[in-house]
Length: 75
Ligand code: HEM
Image (cartoon, rainbow, N blue to C red):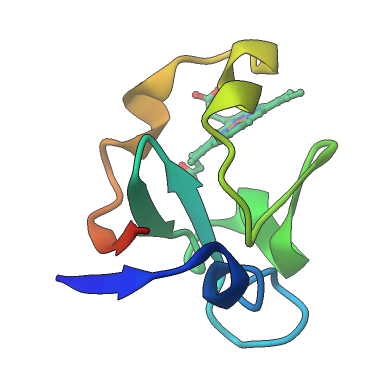
């Protein structure tokens, strides 16, 4: 699988590239298909980042990632 650095991930923020990525627990997920991540924004959170710690602010658990295949490792 591909590897992305934090700096590379930052470009997948919904503004600079067409694909929208978020990182969670060392894996990078492509959420481009989600209407809930349109333009890289999800409530007060932004894509292109490692959002592992922010999950505790969410009203849902990590099961929301089940429908997304990881596309890369975050290194
Ligand atoms: C204030 C914070 C947040 C709110 C209010 C919020 C709200 C929601 C809601 C209402 C959904 C719809 C599905 C469900 O409830 O199971 C959802 C889905 C999702 N959330 Fe969050 N969320 C928050 C933070 C986060 C964070 C920090 C992450 C990443 C670590 C995240 C990742 C996702 C993903 C991947 C989905 C699935 C999208 C889809 O199925 O299209 N959320 N969120």
